[in-house]
Image (cartoon, rainbow over all chains, first blue to last red; front, side):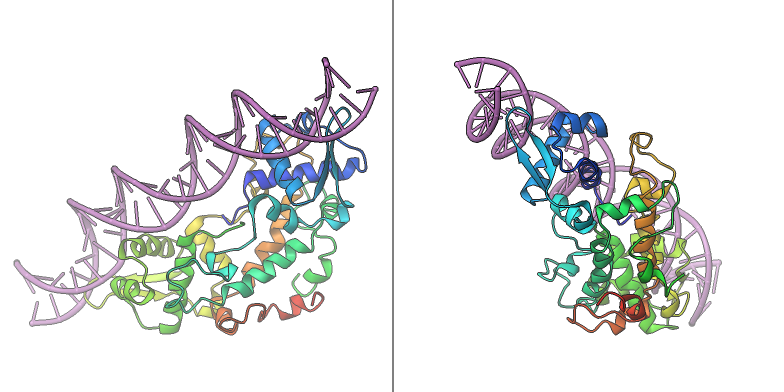
Length: 152
Length: 152
DNA sequence: GCATTCAATACTACATCGGTATACAATTCT
DNA sequence: AGAATTGTATACCGATGTAGTATTGAATGC
């Protein structure tokens, strides 16, 4: 499955919206309505995004949230990490091994390499890039095109 | 976290071992001892690997498991998928949307693109490639080097 | 000072995952 | 044929983590 949690998915969805609105602010309730994500859940996600300084919040009347940087400067890696913590394919990937097999495992120390590549892909894809992936046009990347060149 | 489950991790560890042994057979109990993965858990993993036809099993005395193909021809993507099912970053990624937001979500149809890239990285890395990642030398890929070229 | 809006904390239900136990079927060797 | 060896199948349990909810508090601006 190799999956990204739903909260992180929501996070990206929300960030993407804020990107299109920028620099306007958007209240939490509006965000919930627009994205169809339940309000209390939005609250939880927003906290992560604020803590990670991906969005700026303002309280009081006409308050709300605002994307901290241009969409092109926010990577999916950051967005996911903001919600779910450091990205790591396995426990081995994140160096400080919690894995009790670590010593006998002859794969230890190899995962980080694989991890680095996947990470880099996510780091190289920004919120703005998402727009260039056409709706329902599955397999066409953007600034990753050069990265793909030797493959396709 | 973007994580790969522990069972899949074990699967890769085991496949890797079988690769080094090939074409010799290895009994389940030996596998458990060598990898330090609990026997009942090995049982579970082996079933997946057999079903996916990544390993060949033989019963009776002197039976055991054998890697079905040369290690260079077994990708991490296959190995992970064998244990955990189809790889998808989000529910959106796998086309047949279970996501009830799908219709209103303006990100639907964009995930598959991202997904495809990550997938391709995993498809391009084989069991044999793992050996070329030096122990505790975090960031050095192998046949993916050309893929990295435009990045580093 | 009052309405509006975000912040923080704690809690619950549920699913998934890792791990275990047990009974069964197939093959080989003698 | 029969015993020993080895994989197969099913069902179960418990811990963990995730998504979602509720409630109360604090800041801002008019």
